Length: 283
Length: 283
Image (cartoon, rainbow over all chains, first blue to last red; front, side, top):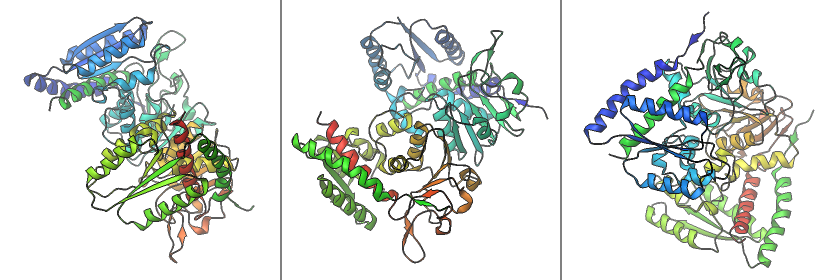
């Protein structure tokens, strides 16, 4: 049996067709969907993500406004930018690159954002929506990308067993909630789980967001399993790799590659949210 | 091996000692902790819960204000009462009996409540706190009662496997989040889980909140397991019973009885939250 590679590009291509159409209809109504990206300091990862997002947005006809603050910019400056963005009806979504520098009060900044513009699901209101399974704000893009990939490739979620490795607010917890909402039976493993491989090996769907290169090997898998590898790191040769050990890549029934898997769909999800936000704000 | 009965009264007695002490210290400072209970219609269950809460509060020196509205009272009337309660510094906590009648907008009512007075964790802000594992507002009393029972009887949570039967916002989800925060590996089963018994039987801690009498039998258990039965129903003879079938009550290592288990600790948790709220609002 060969392992099916769940390429992110196939998912985003399908998403792009729908999105480009929605964007052109919004523009006919005089609405240009616009994403503001707020970034502090000069992290290369943040810059790379921004670059990717801007490029994708351009392709889809979505406007981007990139605001970069110095690493040591004061809290007040960040708050002022968000207040302005909240009040600016030409900005429909705001992405704040996190983690923010340590002198910034993350809770205060997160919750200043208008939940209707919270396209990456970081406000308390958005979180409550994901947690309660109601449509209140947006979900975190990475977690939703996992679901989008499963749906695109026709992998059934309903009634299946899912295991999530990692309990972060960005991936692990929201992915668990979203899979549960879709009627999967979900188990969440984390750094304090005694035998994560034993739990994971029982799952039909394994979402790996351990944040550790090579954290998951074939002992976590079974031959009928679909693996979504959310990890992003560098291997010994300096190449991009996920949290799934390369030796295990041909064990499950299907797996997302890294690079070219979840990451690209995450950016697509962000674009989808911006377009949705623009629609909702201009009904 | 005999099954240990985890009596709620042992937990509440220990809680009461601490609480009575805190109440008397608050009163020395001129603060009388006060809980407002808002109830719509004449449900016997709601009335019984209110009666129990009032009695417990009296015993601890906590004041209660009971407001009962007719079943068909309009939304505006509910909102007015909550606005008044939010503004009244002599009321520290508000318990809204739910489900509310169908003509009431539950989301609107929930989120009108000042999160600092949200002693049963129903606002979006409180939910975000439970979901993210941060101390933002209070947790739902029933879910926290499960944790309190485990802690009181010295049942280790850290590193253990927990299974929750039920995914409600009142018990299942918050219990899952709270156990995960305490480093348990948590699986959540629900009505769409194919084989909940197989998942549950692997757990060290089984929280049963299925909302269905007799839903859980011995096939869900193992001899080392601790079972927290959150269910409350009536058996064929009209006696109070939990979600665990009576035939299974001697299978696990320890189990909470119904009645006399989680319910009584839930009321204790409510009192604890009111006292905490009074303290936090009078620092």
